[in-house]
Length: 483
Image 1 (tube, helix red, strand yellow):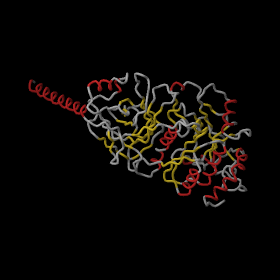
Image 2 (tube, helix red, strand yellow):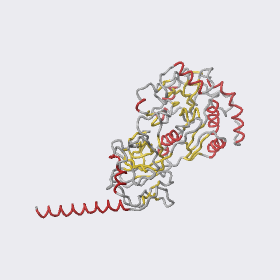
Image 3 (cartoon, rainbow, N blue to C red):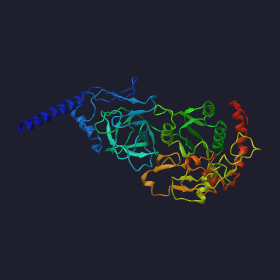
Image 4 (cartoon, one colour):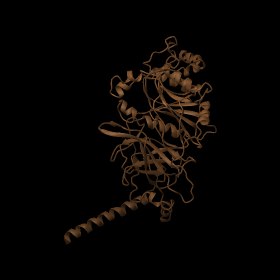
């Protein structure tokens, strides 16, 4: 027993010695550079030149919440942290315990927040609802990172990849309270899986632009890939422009040349903000592309949250349509909704019921093929509330957005009347596609049953003439055949 006790005491003394040496080494490293992304993919972590005990004490007590400061024993003594990128360097990776792919990080200091400002990190990881993650916030001029816990919010349902289940997330890092209640954005942020993890990611924290004049209606679209009918895209973009949308943000991954040419044309003309959507995993399977849908949507929202007064969300085969003859654009639409369905709330989200104009239903063959909406004037009964709705949102209170609507708002507004289930006589999300329910439900005959009762609906005819000539001109400029 005495020998065992002696061995334990020796081991404890040895570990204490390592701890003291590590602490001394951390406090005597001399390098006062801020984090910079180096050409060799290394990140230079901040160091302090000959720090005094007083300076250390001041740094530790800078924040009222001292538990959020990284303990001295945990800060890595390594001069460089190797940042791990995915195969195309579009995402950074943390993989010590499980896989985390990180896309972008934004500083969120909206006046509507009911917390301190935050850093919102957008990414994908294995399912982790029951795990605690940590943020390392790197501030300019601060010798060591500030550590806070991640507030996790999913932005998708997830899909399987290489034998694991992955899900899309927003990792929120709330800045600790400062003594003087003033805040600045960190320069960089890392996400780690435990207090003792070495970060292998360091994302620049982007500060969203605050413009002198806002865009009244901006649109964010999820990841765009493979083949999109170029004729439909031209009609879709011109209708949005007609209705008052000022900018459409599109993220391209693997679009065919004809589709890509349309977006490049509208990008050159200042209507489309056309960006690359890099794969996070090295495969072209659709599941991997689906994992990118909501990350790029949230990237769009946070990048433009001060630029867009209202955020419109639809897909390329959908249009939120102002349905009354008195409505010519989205301004008219929202004004009429507010009059007919008043809500005493400053930051409303408008939810539009889905209605299918299935392309299986017979078109009007006497109308030109280059315009879809005037040819297909037969619809089925509109969908129930909640199914496949699309929305016009207020980015001032949205925390997490999905490709249908805002999934989470700032908590102090959550009990308010922030959603409007728009009356179908005022507006609907008109959905143009072939019926997919036989495959989706795995029930042959479902489509035939759904299309037994149909309705003639000529709402879109009044928008044909205003866009017809510009659509034809664009088709000619892109050397496409006029059908």
